[in-house]
Amino acid sequence: GAGVSQSPSNKVTEKGKDVELRCDPISGHTALYWYRQSLGQGLEFLIYFQGNSAPDKSGLPSDRFSAERTGGSVSTLTIQRTQQEDSAVYLCASSPRGWGVNTGELFFGEGSRLTVL
Amino acid sequence: DQQVKQNSPSLSVQEGRISILNCDYTNSMFDYFLWYKKYPAEGPTFLISISSIKDKNEDGRFTVFLNKSAKHLSLHIVPSQPGDSAVYFCAASAKERGSQGNLIFGKGTKLSVKP
Image 1 (cartoon, rainbow over the protein chains, first blue to last red):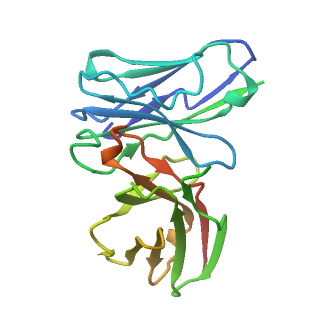
Image 2 (spheres, rainbow over the protein chains, first blue to last red):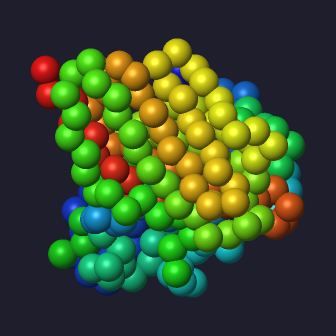
Image 3 (cartoon, chains in turn blue, brown):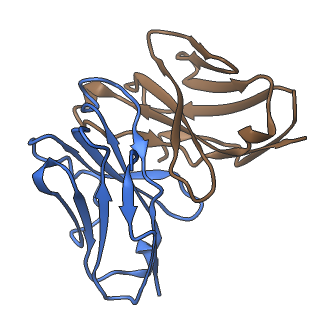
């Protein structure tokens, strides 16, 4: 597809389990972002990848959260030992260039809805 | 300590009338502002943006106004259409902060345009 693709679209897990969320950015986009939206909240920045530079992890809420981007394309967000407060929609976005280089808009995927029971 | 605030969680407007969505920010270092629109079960989509060197940007039915002294921006939709019904997010960024990619979003305003 032409857009940002995320999987799974829905994930229900038990507290304490690990989950992996996947993002396929738009082909050729060098920048990739993860955000999450908890119920009634705005979009919360988590992490940003730009090319081969070290990622900006300043938004990750705890060390249970990690993300990697392999080959400059697909990204996986991993949440270890999930807690109920991790329940949210996790949104991935990509852009053709890094934010600081060109203040272009972000192209978002449809999100992965995570529910931790 | 919300840096981007959308104080109206919802707004209802009659079709054909003007919709005005408001956004306030606290960080004077913000220099770029965007509006995104989000339909249910879809990701947000970019709508319009404005740099801090401008006070107005217009794109068709959509106009964004920026008042730097008041740290306030607004999105005007004229005329409003039922298809505009969605959640609108205001977002801001400060390139000089060095935290690249850290786009700060408000909580959103749900706009309902009634036929």
